[in-house]
Length: 303
Ligand code: UTP
Image (tube, rainbow, N blue to C red; front, side):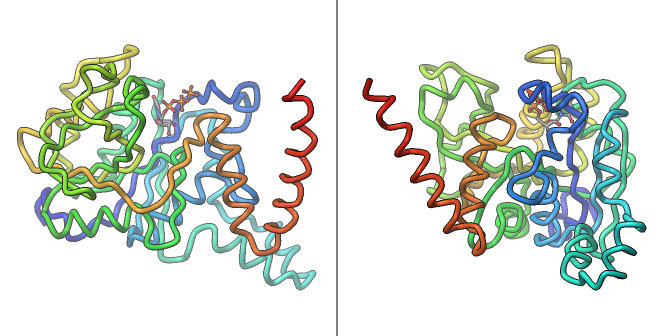
């Protein structure tokens, strides 16, 4: 397999070594990726998306404070025994399904939070020469069809290209995102000609913003090794991808689905509402509570 053969992408990298300062003080002890949306931690949604897309080797880039992530994917013998003994088979299955038997988890450490590009680089010894996926668990993507990564891998195979997930953002917000220039954009995908980190609205080449899903060739590692720290003094994945554009085709894919920025408090709240409404056993109660809560707020707003 060559490093640009996107037919068999089996490895997925989850960079989870960030500090999560926007959720302090909770993230003093609870990693951001372990914050729950309804009854599952954010990381579980991303892992399920990767497995559904055919990945069987999951590489978690953690730091020394994030034992909780490794513990979560480890076997919980005592808990399983208790559930088994008390005949709670459904709960037992839920606990065991956290990671299916055919999937292996590998943990690598990012000693210092030197940026997303650096975190991805830490996965190099496990990825080797193969193309791979990167999923940022705090970008939670809800889809009632195939997951975002499965959609991207289909495009990667069809076009023998790397793929970056994008979504439309209001022009006023381009300064918060990596923005792609895709002159041949078809409405759902197109080849990326350039990529700019956090451009001002008046100079942004488009309003297509990069979100946390990537399909990349192993060549990105060499480029990241030569990437100088960029915005915020961190090694930016965007800068590595920008260097890649001269070498191999990279596609932007506007995925079907809705992305929640669960790295922000409002995003986590929105995701919680959305997923509560998707749960058969919660939807009615959630809807009723939201109606009541909004009704109480209304008089105050008109004062
Ligand atoms: P963010 O930009 O959201 O940073 O990282 P953060 O530190 O997690 O959160 P805030 O901004 O302080 O609240 C985007 C993704 O990159 C990972 C994070 O874990 C997250 O999944 N990351 C970032 C690393 O793994 N290492 C880093 O050095 C930086």
